[in-house]
Image (spheres, rainbow, N blue to C red):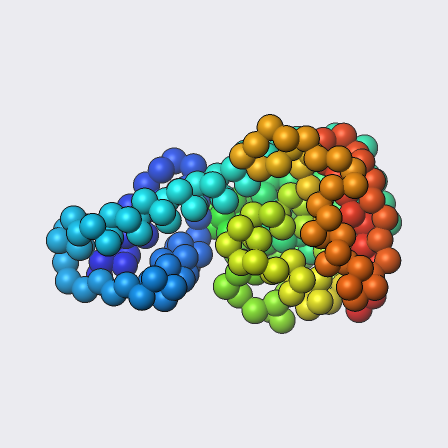
Length: 239
């Protein structure tokens, strides 16, 4: 089937190999639906057509921009940053788009329960192994808020959305509003890089006005802290 061949070829780049097949499949489906394009026949013939070449080029760029850059900005945080994020997080934590950060912070508070999700299936397998080895409570699993329903997620004390929202917004406008409303938790910690994705523009502490407006509409209480290379929003949501 041409779709499976297309997914395999889109993931051909080294930085995209870990992507979950279902995530890529849904990005293709989104494109076909929005553009009103349809393909049928042998993949070898389809890939030579102009409409397919355009789709492939745009999807490869989208995946690299959103996922590739998204991975690159996850530089190591200091222990003090994780202590600030987690010390008042309660006993259970859900990290959406966790990346490799749990390898650094889970062992700081091994008594907590961790739910770790990402769109990188290979990474999720490594996280599962780490949790088993260290006998940590919780689980790691593949999840995309773009495609999966949020009611699949557990109710927790704190949700972490660290450097993820701008990547999600690039694929679905106002997804942040849906996440804030539907996540079942008492607190949410959101962070943004001080340098905008793909640019060299520094963001002031008062920046991300679009996100502050999104918090103020439902009347959420929040504080903003400038910590190291990120701007953190500590949001009190209530269940």
